[in-house]
Image (cartoon, rainbow, N blue to C red; front, side, top):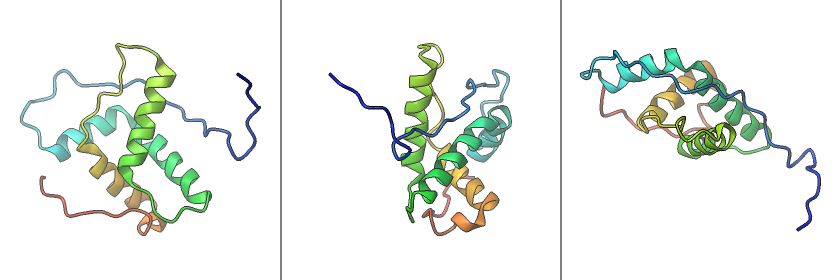
Length: 122
């Protein structure tokens, strides 16, 4: 098998990935929004990584991107980088709907990049 060195077009974006932190004392009756806010406060690097992935994708000339795709890329990169079976990217899949809204809030220029739906749960 031969490999070629990556060109600037194939170089992977570096992401500063932390370790997933959780709050064992979190109440069980939190709404999805409350649980997201707690998770985001403990893991700000997740937002930063999603923002970096979005910016990279958009600067490559893409006009639309799905948050689920970025979420799964982040999950794959996290699991590949950490290589720790006890530190898997175990995050509530409902959080991606909150992250996309946070990305748009912080980067209004991305409002047309993402498609969002009405939230059904608080």
